[in-house]
Length: 90
Image 1 (spheres, rainbow, N blue to C red):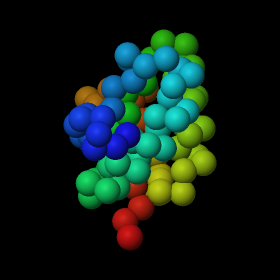
Image 2: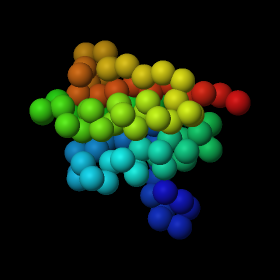
Image 3: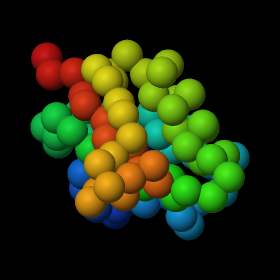
Image 4: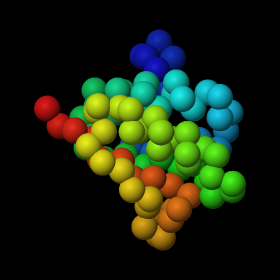
């Protein structure tokens, strides 16, 4: 993601409109954009379904050095259909 894409990066990313094959590349770009904007925590909505997107998201978060920790969201924030990500601050 970059400024030329004219996309607004917020602290919530809803993956319902993305193909699983796109998510592997999207997550690192999204995390980098969030860090540039000073976010310390973000929520990634992957849905409940069969867990395919959740597994892809969690694998991408495991490999990302900018991620301090992550956990499934509280029920009011999406429960097991969303992941809360805490970002490292520098």
